Length: 439
Image (cartoon, rainbow, N blue to C red; front, side):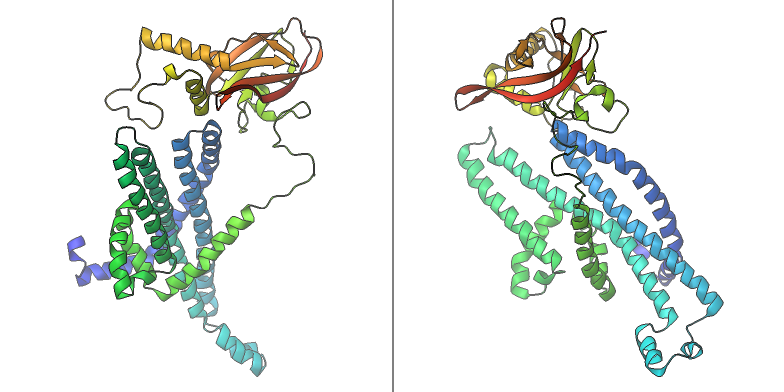
């Protein structure tokens, strides 16, 4: 079929499909909106969880998915509303025909004005049709733009990690090649962005286009724009499409600006304030987090009110914890850091056996040397082990004996040793209030 695009029969088929495409548009939009609203909240939760646990790869993927969902929801809802208005206008035209300004019996001034500004009802229907078709098409084009920006940022990050900060490349190569290439990519990204927002102005001048072409060619592969260029240029060669793009971009920026507003009800009270001796944040209490979409804090205890003779303390694992352990005991740092995005094909890059088990014991001992637990001003013995919390998140868990603790309010304090410029200091990283009333 792709070889017969000049065939009159094929062009006739395309024209027929264009005339009937509104049915497919509504069908796709309806199913897409339902699915997008269904998955938007879980994706938002994944973004926050990845942010809290500092999983950078998961955070990037889920953030791009969240932005794409938001764009599609807005555009497709707008498309359905306009397409519904278009269908209503078609039904009204069937009943009433075109606008008869003479029957309205308005004054000559208003009749002239309305004929000029409102015009024919058929023109109004045609304009709605154009808006609906272009908004539907641009909805998916915008997703490609988001992916293009993401791929560009990832490409810059890969240069920084695997070239500029490479351990296996000689310094003169990593710096001599990496720095000029990084500068070229950053400048090229800026130039490509200028060409994008000016709707291809750099391609119009002969001498500028010759300089810009290599950059355009390279970024075509980085952003995968060769997959959707026909859609872009078919959109830009249409006057109505260009005009709509100038309307939509400021509109998106306005929506982004409006979404940043929030209402603050107090000068001193805020639900996002971290736990302290005067604040009890829900993120630190497991019984209040169970069954909710709230995110666990980096330290949790079972409840605000403890009735058992012991207190469970859970510290959520984060990659920076391992960095601190390596800084405290450099012998634990492997030659090849296995953290990050890995591939299971060929097996996991993980060593099992007695050697790994002995290193894991040293790892936990170092963790326990770094982190300590206090209640009020008294330090308690803690022996953290690897575990998972009620949400199956990996972390470190210990149990504190409370037999000697008096009834009433107390403050759990989590401290860690910090090494900075050769100096070792003890830092308080979390305070969690609780009430102890033994059964």
